[in-house]
Length: 510
Image 1 (cartoon, rainbow, N blue to C red):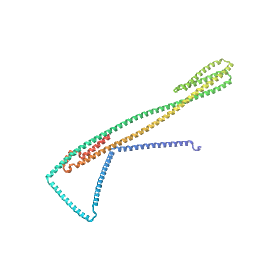
Image 2: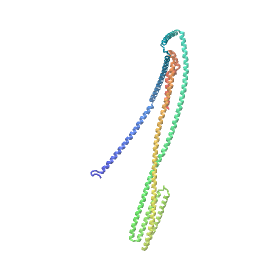
Image 3: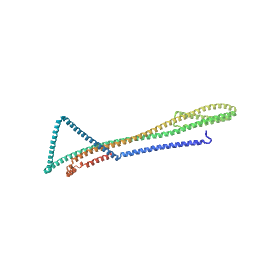
């Protein structure tokens, strides 16, 4: 019950405003949630792209290679330290074993031990004197060598022959190393080229397969879109057809209602005419009434025939029978209408007694004909109604089937969209894996080049160890550098750097 001071419209308006505000808040919340989702996605993509650019940059590559070389050098230092420690451990163990053997050989007798100590001291003194004599002789011999010109010249010639021989050996070793390095480089380039061709072939085949799959899916998607469009057109057509059927059923019901009204009017009119007892006038009026009823039935049947002729798409046996029944009924009504016109012409020449007899006889005939006509009209209208109901059921089933097929097509399109999203993610993972594989190949190339550079550097250090500079002969050193330009350490470092940069450019280009 509403309060006398408050209006019910105000409460309904307040509830409407509250609902609108709730809907607005929900819509704003959905928008904010969608905006946050999109912004989060773009932030993640930005961070991911920046990280990928940073990881794939040349600076990151150089940092990785520097850390890798630093770790290799640290491992080599650790390994050499362990080797030195092991050698020292072995030497200490040998010395400890010797000392233990000497201690075991000592006799526990004190007198014998003192005699042995005296003897050992004498032996040590004699050995020291012997070493001093040998050192004095060596010093005298060295002084004699330095002061004798012929001996110095002979020693210089021997040293020059020795250096020349070593230069020849180093030249042969250098040629062999260059040939081996060229063969290794050629083998590595061939292997790299073969791997690159295979990778390009695989990428090309994968690209062709992906394009063919994309074309096939595009065709399927186009076909599904066309089928969905046809289903929508069919649904629209079925809806219009259902509206037309409902309109036809309404017209049939309207015709039946008009016939019922006409029948009631006829009964009332018969009652009024029966009270008047004017047979001839009644016969004429009754004949006109029957003619009007026949004309009305003729109009109904003409409308039914016109509706049947307009709907010729479903050619079934039931429809043909309905059309045939309606046409036959129309012919019968036309014949009865013609007969009533003839009977109306005969009424003018009848007397009262004859008119009464004719009235009774004609009334019985009219009643019989009316009942037959009523039965036939009921059958025709019932057939038309059943036909409309059947059409409406078929239309309803067709709409349900079209709706079900449309939902299936929409689900297929959603699945296709999800599959394409999964394929794009798979392609991204493949690109990442391919990039990692290329990075691994670059690291492998640099590792090989680093190992080759280490061997070359060690060879260069050995050559420097055999370099004539250690003999303090600048002219011989200059001649050696001119004869062996590739053995110089700076040249070796430049060559290894050039090879590494060339390999990097090739891989990056690929």
